[in-house]
Structure formats: C-alpha cells, structure tokens
Image 1 (tube, helix red, strand yellow):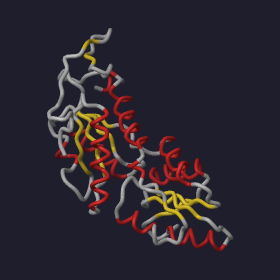
Image 2 (cartoon, rainbow, N blue to C red; image 1 turned 180 degrees about the vertical axis):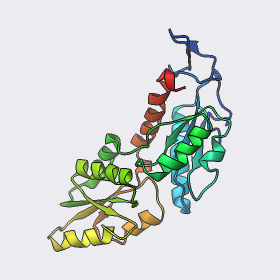
Image 3 (cartoon, rainbow, N blue to C red; image 1 turned 90 degrees about the vertical axis):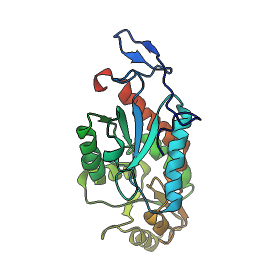
Image 4 (cartoon, rainbow, N blue to C red; image 1 turned 120 degrees about the vertical axis):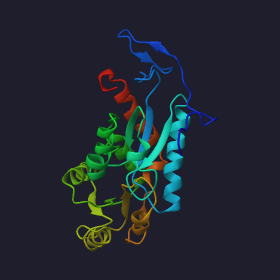
Length: 250
C-alpha cells in the first residue's frame, strides 16, 4: 500500500494558506512540510504472517486515509513484511506514526535509525494512551479478574508501558511469549484463587500468533484486537496532527 491519498490513489496537493509566521497551511489547518504540502503520514506496523492480521492493519491504514483524503498515507513495517521502514521512508518528507503499543526496541532503534538517516520525524507510539485503556475497558464486561495480555519483551521501557496500562485497568500483567508471567499461568493462578469469570484484555493491535494463543489460555473472554476500534484511527491522526502542528519539527 503506497500513497492512499484519495479515491484516485494519487496524493492530493493543495496550495493552502499561510500562517501568521509564514508557514504553509493545508486545507484542514494542517501545516505543510518543506515542499509546500502536508508531510506524508508513514504508518509503521510490526508486521505479521497472519493473513487476518495483515488485512486488519491495512484496513486501519485505509480508514486513516479515508478520514484525511488531503494526506498521502503509506504503510511500512519493522519486521516480517515489506516494505521495511528504512526503504519506505527514503526520499520522503514524512512523519512516521508507529503502529506499536509501547516504546520498545522497534521504536527506539529500528524506527529511530530510519528517521535519523532520512531527516524525518516520528511521533510517539500509540501506547500507552488513555484511548487504548478506554477501548479495553469498554470490552471487559463483568469480569471479576482481568488479565492484560501483551506480546512480551525484556525491554525496560516496554515493560513500564505495559505496567502503566495494567494499573489503569486494574489488571494482572501477562505475556504471550517469554518464560515468565505467561498468560495461561496467570489465568490458572487466578482460577486457583477463586476467580470465576476471567477476561483477557488483549493488548495487541491485530491478529497473529500471539493473539491466537490467547484463546487457548483458559479465560472466559478474550477481547478483540485493538485496531478495529475507531478510536485507534483517531489516535493515529492525533499523533500526526500533534507533531505537524509544531512548526519547529517540520
């Protein structure tokens, strides 16, 4: 997917107006980049071998593009799928929006290196953000125990983000990979402690190997992947807008 900017697939360019400081402004009050048009919104996902997960991420980016037909919206990846972010960003005046749920290795290394090498800018990842917490809360229902299930990482920044979300939900942290706090083990411990209705709050953006494993972990309910929630496309656009409205960053 490249250049999802309007029905024709071509970027829509507007001469726009100018701010009091002389900076070009796009049709929605959007400051434009160095070339007189809004910077490309380059959404960067992790990548997955799951056909369903791939479709869900493409659909999310399509919805973002439909919400802002004035923008050139593109999709790249940090792993598994192509194009990788370092290739996709080359030569672009771009704002990278990581479709990732915490500030782990891919944000701090893969995306940061691609951005630095191309004189671009990147927003914060999507999580942790109150919008994601609200999305999970709306799907938890009447559980008497909630397990926040994340992919798993040894990165301290990543773990701190997960702990933040779990605290906001009042949930128990568990991981779909690694050797500690595995989701089935945490669910089994809660059952042994008397929990009768356990919900796994899936802190995963799309379907894939990790998401599939949650349905075999022994809980009563597994929440759907986050990317289907319209709040996520709003969050993607908010990340882009927050950065592009800061003139010194473009």
